[in-house]
Amino acid sequence: MCRASGIAGSHQRRTVKMAAGLRKRGRAGPAVRAAGLCGQWLRRAWQERRLLLLEPRYTLLVAACLCLAEVGITFWVIHRVAYTEIDWKAYMAEVEGVINGTYDYTQLQGDTGPLVYPAGFVYIFMGLYYATDRGTDIRMAQHIFAVLYLATLLLVFLIYHQTCKVPPFVFFFMCCASYRVHSIFVLRLFNDPVAMALLFLSINLLLAQRWGWGCCCFSLAVSVKMNVLLFAPGLLFLLLMQFGLRGALPKLGICALLQDGGKYPVAAEGSFQKESSTPAPHTQSYPLNYGMIISTLFTSNFIGICFSRSLHYQFYVWYFHTLPYLLWATPARWLTHLLRLLVLGLIELSWNTYPSTSCSSVALHVCHAVILLQLWLGPQPFPKSIQHSKKVH
Image (cartoon, rainbow, N blue to C red):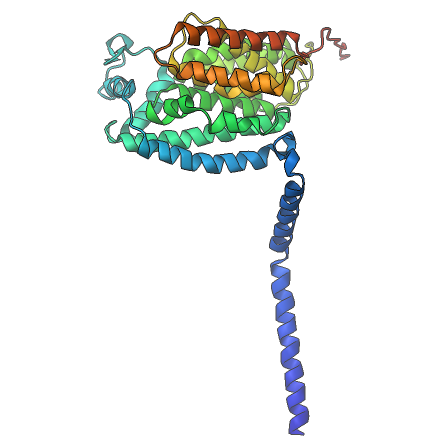
C-alpha cells in the first residue's frame, strides 16, 4: 500500500516537473528561435566568408563590426592624441554674446572674427556651451562629438545598406583609415560634422519617402553651416521629379520658413506626413528609387566641391563619406577596384598633408577629375528620355 502510494507520488512529481519544463520552454521559445536564426545567419556568413567583404548584402554585418571598432579607436584618439584649439573658443565666445542678450550679428564675434554662421549653429552650440561648463570642459565636448561621429556613421551605413551597390570592404577605408576625419570630429570640434550629421539624417528621411521631414532636416543642416547648400540643386531636381512644380512648392516652403525662424504659419498643412508618390493634380512625376536619390544628391555636392575657390581642412567631411558611393555605384569599366582604392588613398593623403603643397593640391584635383570622368562615363541613374503619361481627371 505504502509502496503503491510512493510510486504514484513519484509519478505525479515527474509529471509536474515535465509540465513545468514544457511551460519554461514555451516561454523561452521566441528567444530560442531568435538565437537559432541568428546562429544560422552567422554560420552562413562564415561559410560565405570569402564573399563577406564583396557582397553588399553583408553591409549591416560589416557596419556593426566597424562601429564597434570605431568605439575603441575614437576613445583612443581622445585620450592619446592631443587636442588642438582652432575654432572652439571662438564658437563659445560667439554664442556667449547671444546668451548675454546681443542679437545683432554685426556685434557678435569671437577670436577668429565676426559670427558668420546661421541661427541653427547658435542654438546647437549654445547647448554645447551649457553642456561643457561654458565651453571649458573640452573632454566632455570631445565625448559628445565622438557620439556624433558614431551617429553619423550609422546614418551613412543605413544609406549604403539601402543602395546595395558598394562592396563592404570599402567601408574599412571609410572608417578606420581616415586620420583627418577623426581629427575633424574629436580633436578640432568643428561645426561641419554637426551640419553633415543632419544632412545624412535628411537623406535617410528622403529615402523613407518622408519628404517633408527630409526637407525640414535639410534646412536645419543649412542653418548650421551653409555648405549644405551644395546639395540644394540636387534636392530641387528630385522634388520637381517626384512632385512636379506645384507639389514641390510646399516642400520648398518648409525649407524657407525654417530659415526665416518660423514667423509665418505654414500654407503646407500635412507636408510633414508620409507622402505617397502620387503627384498633385495637373502635375507629372517620375518614380525615384534609392539610387536616383543618392546619386543626384551626392553628385550635386561633389561638383560644388570640385569647383570651390578654396578648400580648408575641415571641408573634407563635406564629401568624405560620399566618395565610396561616387566611385563604386556607377562604375566605369576602365576603373578597377585597385584604381578606385588608389584614388581614395591619394585623396586621404592630400588632405593629410599640412601645410598643403603643389604636389598634394595637384593630386587632389587629379583625383577629383577622375571621379568626375567616372560619373560622366558611367551608367546614369536617370534615363535619357522620360516619358510622362497624362493623367485623366
